[in-house]
Amino acid sequence: MSKKMFGDIMKQAQKMQQEMGKIQEEAKKKTVEASSGGGMVTVTASGAMEIVSIKIEKNVVNPDDIEMLQDLIAAAVNEALRRAQNMVAEDMSKLTGGLQIPGMGGLFGQ
Image 1 (cartoon, rainbow, N blue to C red):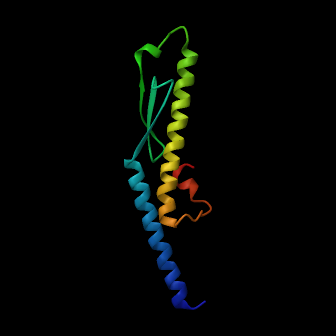
Image 2: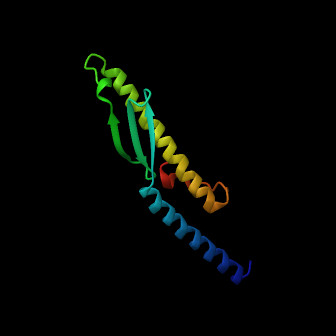
Image 3: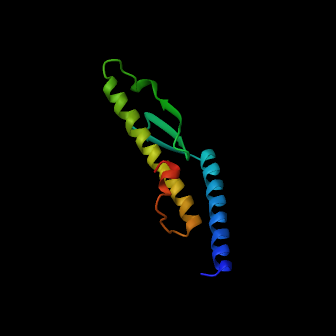
């Protein structure tokens, strides 16, 4: 491999790394929403895989059935995080042209 070819490859790698950094920063600003129990519990998550908010309808809060509320929260959180991962994976796929690059999933908590 010639020095020029190697240099070009390194430039492309650096450019891709910069673009990945931009995607990570943009992902922190993007959010997705998921709900469970017919909208009784709604969770918003960021592209950085952080829970931004949890909204619980008053009528689902029953002190005699805490387990149901816990299940609804867990279901909504899991779905919100799954949607956030898919959103980031889609953005990353645009950068890589759909190419799956090993180890990149860990950059976004996937």
